[in-house]
Length: 130
Image (cartoon, rainbow, N blue to C red; front, side, top):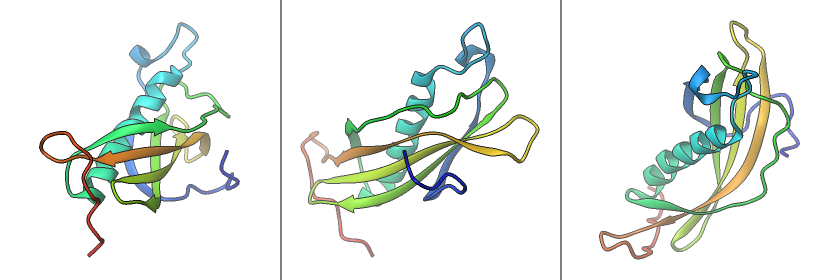
């Protein structure tokens, strides 16, 4: 887990509401739903940086520190930590803004590796930043 327990690190990339359809019978949000939202946010941020198509190549270790509950707002923060020739590593933090509250708690974090692809689906160089 990220050592910063107080404030999110990175750029807020996605916010979405946890709904009953995303939960088990006890009202706990499925971990797979949280991970899918993290992957969506990575796709947004990595495509912006690559200025084109990207795919998820790997997700490094993920552990859940706190549960998400129905009604919480999931906030995904992303920091691009490494850009290679065709891939980039994004540090992703998932935070829960608790229902009808200003309280923010970190749910999980992970490193996602995204690869830039050309029109034929082959890895392509990530352009230099402007």
